[in-house]
Image: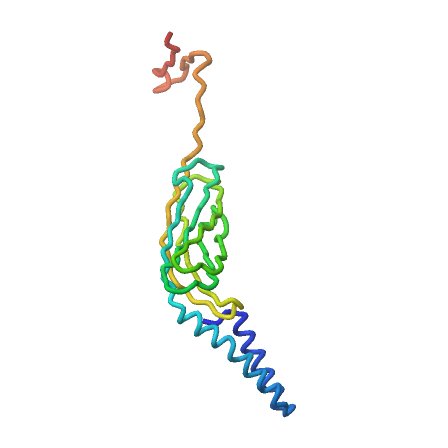
Length: 189
């Protein structure tokens, strides 16, 4: 599928072709056809590059407390027969953890892998899903992009803050009425 840049190139090529027709210039005709054909070739290149990937996500810690930084590492291994072109990795995050993480991996040779990392700071307690990870293959000029693989999410649990209770102070004695009258707290020795 052509990217925004690819569609702009096709539109510019068509506009140049119309201008070449009006001016009667053969050289501009050839240039216009070339500009229109390049995004189409890029789209075919991206679709035919059979990417066989092995993708793993690793969290530095799956259970944390508020304010803790979690490092997310994504390893992409090329299991195909040819070098992979540019890859765009986009890991979805819930709004409380931040904006989706985007990383670019360029040219992974056959039987090699590359690891990229990013970090998120967990500010609120709760259960959050990091991911899913979507991988897009792009051509070197950014004219076409294809969705290759989606990796399921990983879970991060943020525990509530724990406050220590000081074991000191005076013993209290209730002076209320009703149920509160029978509650007496004494410091045991």
